[in-house]
Image 1 (cartoon, rainbow, N blue to C red):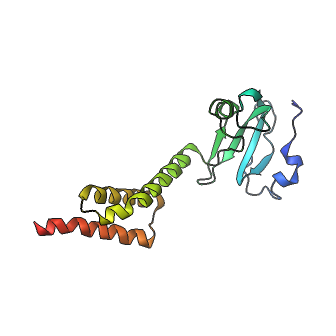
Image 2: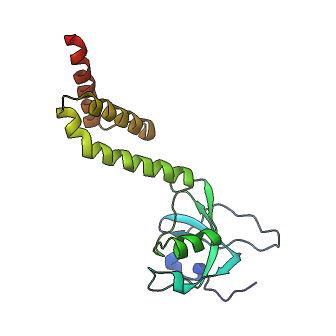
Image 3: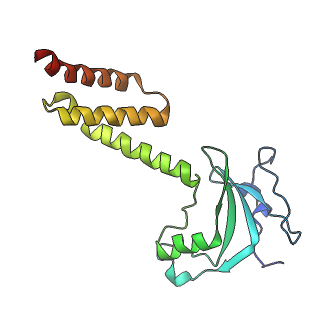
Length: 181
């Protein structure tokens, strides 16, 4: 079925010169293949043109050039490499109801996105509170910062040297009041 849409593979700027790293997608039940496999903003994507649904341009508040249709995309997560789906219905909700800019396109599966978001939140908490935790005499900020650092280590696998040193300083500061008892 031809929907009269531009096939992104016609534009060499939108495709890799080699699809060796892209997955092979099996044919759909109706015999159509999901093509093309393109690299969109560093992420492998395959579009399923059979899932095409019309878009409402009036609801795309942030779009100078609104979408006319949404198409289900099968995407390889940039972090874990697993495939996930950004359905036409999800796109309609994201762009029309939630008001995301049309440049938004998921690069991570839900699990990796949640881990990335959590890591970012913890780094911000660390940056905002480490000085206070090191200089205060109160125990709660010190204990909270140690927990933040430990959670960052569990997400990242290892810590920068400076963060390990600061964690040791906090642990030592917590041990001092116990030594004085």
